[in-house]
Image (cartoon, rainbow, N blue to C red; front, top):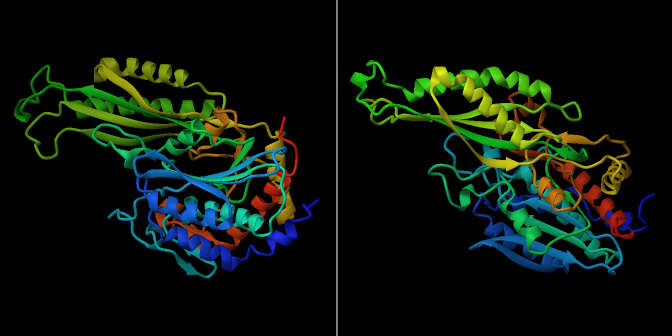
Length: 422
């Protein structure tokens, strides 16, 4: 049964208001490491709604934006959250089209622009829901919090790539929780195509390096001279043989993890007169709940040991470990989210597992049950024929953002009106 204040609040959530709210966000460039202006904008909106706000500095000049609407103090506390950084900077010369620029373009009910899909549409929906609760001065037993966080995008420092623009994978969320912003449960507004995600794949990033012989290229045909590029290709062949078995052996909710050979580096392009003395292979290894990172390390070491006779001894290191996460489908938060979705849409939905990384893993690891639910993920019919979202540019259907905002509203009214989850 809908909360008695739902209709009174939901009447303010319209396509026009949501479109304006999301467009404001998309128009603010917020690449990883440069989220400050977006944080100030979000903090200002929350303050004007009447929330207690603060900017929580993660790095110098790089804050999370936090707003709290206190309840009576005896109910379940709910945290809405989402990252402010975008998948790209907006100035990449290899990306073309309006969906890759921090400028909102509204056309035929869709908004195109960097961050429209991932994940300013979710942040806009959550903010819209909280603003109408504040506007109608709804009495709630529990606290309602919104946190826009920095540094979620799947980036990590490696080799010469360092600094805050590479500081992703939950940097802001871990800081958020460790410095006192918590709740009984959390809803992460990541793109899910309006499906409740109670599970998320994890990921391990590995670097495999082989050494070659320092030599002039004219002597590279001499006995005992090792070409590191040739050696790394032999290792890649061994890894390719391992991948299908790895992927087949693991699954969760009918989804299998995959392994991507994501980068290869070696030699000196500016000095081909030198035999390559070092080469590296970089792997993105997705994981599902129940897997062990240590088992993956052992498997890869075995693969490299088998390839050693042909390619030489390789060094193996790891620089990302983002664990998978799974909440029981019967958990109160999952059931509340499913009920809110059905209440708003009239359609029942089964929980799903998300493939891309998400900050839900950090909340769940710190004992704060967290699910993902967001409006992004649906593709424009014309764009769907051309490829994936990362190929055509970000966009979102405004009506999906409206739906998500109403689902967030229903969930907030339901959760924050009861006693804390046991």
